[in-house]
Image 1 (cartoon, rainbow, N blue to C red):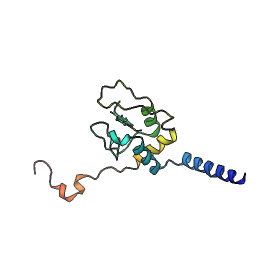
Image 2 (image 1 turned 30 degrees about the vertical axis):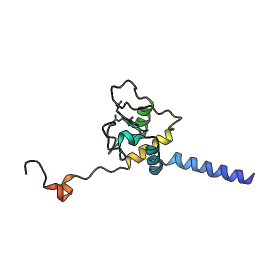
Image 3 (image 1 turned 45 degrees about the vertical axis):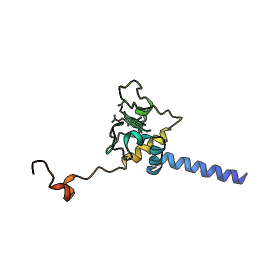
Image 4 (image 1 turned 180 degrees about the vertical axis):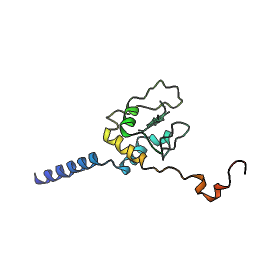
Length: 122
Ligand code: HEC
């Protein structure tokens, strides 16, 4: 009985912790495991099949709203599938949003010496 209480406490504490603070690491794992990366790239950089999501991704609520209500009739060769709450809970989407928000903007070409002098017309 005491052991069950301890397990219950640990599970409860884990649930509270993940509800309070979205996890970048968990978000990255989810992003890879459910296949977002296949269309949007491993860093959200986009690909031929999916839009660029980073830097400055949409907020978690907007991402959740979008992924739950995709339009399968969108004329695209790789229309985005819908993800219900059974597949990705709101907490899961918050973790994915935290992962996307953690991705920094790319460096300016001017900060890279080898690229600095490669401007058109030079
Ligand atoms: C089969 C390819 C595919 C997969 C897998 C996919 N997407 Fe997409 N996604 C798209 C395409 C194509 C669009 C643009 C289509 C549209 O606007 O209806 C899009 C649009 C979006 C947008 C809206 C971006 C904007 O600025 O309007 C978000 C956010 C997004 N995807 C997040 C995700 C997340 C998170 C996952 C994983 C849970 C995911 N996508 C999985 C193809 C995909």
